[in-house]
Every structure is written in structure tokens, then in C-alpha cells.
Length: 79
Image (cartoon, rainbow, N blue to C red; front, top):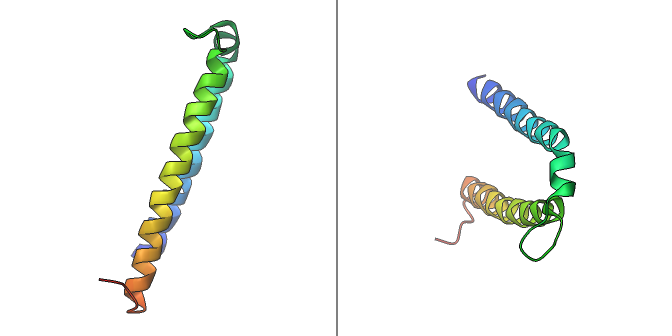
């Protein structure tokens, strides 16, 4: 019962954080498109580029953690 509440809570927290980040991005869209970086690249493009790399790396670590936990649950872990 506690595990289900924990999972529901963190599911809502992830959705909230993602929606809040999208909202903040939309509020500052004109600032992002008008500003330029040192290499004359639009700032919004640079943020999106960096964010997608960080998101991909974080997803890899989450996948590794979940798969290791699943391996331990079924006693097929490598260590």
C-alpha cells in the first residue's frame, strides 16, 4: 500500500516538474529567440540542445538502475 502511494506521488511529481519546466520555457520564448550565444547561435536552440543531451544521459542512468534492481529481484544479477 505504501509502495503504491510512493509510486503515485513520484509520478505526479515528475509530471509536475516537466509541466512547470515547459511553462517557464514558454514564458521566456521571446527572450530565447532574440538572444544569441557567443557563436551567434540562438539561445533557445542551445538550451534545447543541451537539455536533450542531459535528458538522454539521465534516462540511461534510470534504465541501468531499474534493470539492476530487476536483476536482483529475480536473482540473476552479475555481482
